[in-house]
Length: 189
Ligand SMILES: Cc1cc2nc3c(=O)[nH]c(=O)nc-3n(C[C@H](O)[C@H](O)[C@H](O)COP(=O)(O)O)c2cc1C
Image 1 (tube, protein in one colour):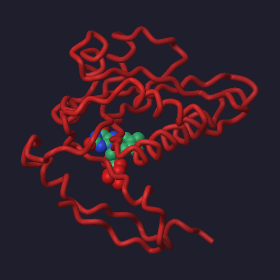
Image 2 (cartoon, protein in one colour; image 1 turned 90 degrees about the horizontal axis):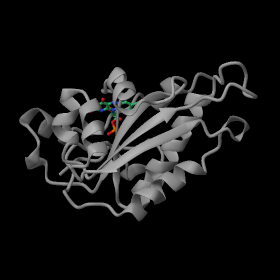
Image 3 (tube, protein in one colour; image 1 turned 180 degrees about the vertical axis):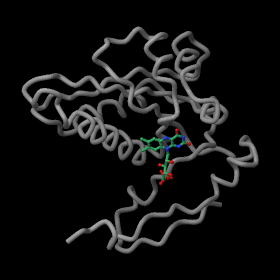
């Protein structure tokens, strides 16, 4: 059983509940569940309402799209992510105007969108794990994305599963208590 951290202040249960698991149950999600998560992302705030995020997603259904997504992952992530019922790639698509020449807030906006998605997931008893460990060149090659788009993170989503499906290394990681810098360190003034 995963030990829960001690919070400095009593934050809401929906935020307490979130963590990044690696052991997922094989239970498939419905299209409606996944689209509900993407809809939650859609309603995030963004600079000038430009919504500079895009998604490529698949159920773990052996389809060509799923195989391509899985192939983009770093080996260490693929080892456990292959058991998750859903994979989502999140891409940044920064419009160049009117949020400045490069829309420097585009990644911030994308993070807010994934934050919405993640909170919605918690409310649905689903768990999200972000992965920066993927091969960007492979994403470009396999999905032929627009040159102005950049893959930023890949997500696994699903219900919590039995940790016995993981190797020893990942079983230990799964049981580690979440740690954070003290709040004092994060507040400058
Ligand atoms: C942008 C981003 C990239 C991440 N990349 C990986 C990854 O490639 N592999 C992995 O196992 N975890 C990855 N993580 C998960 C973090 O390690 C995890 O969020 C952090 O240790 C805090 O743990 P918690 O989410 O359980 O609270 C990533 C998280 C974020 C936000």
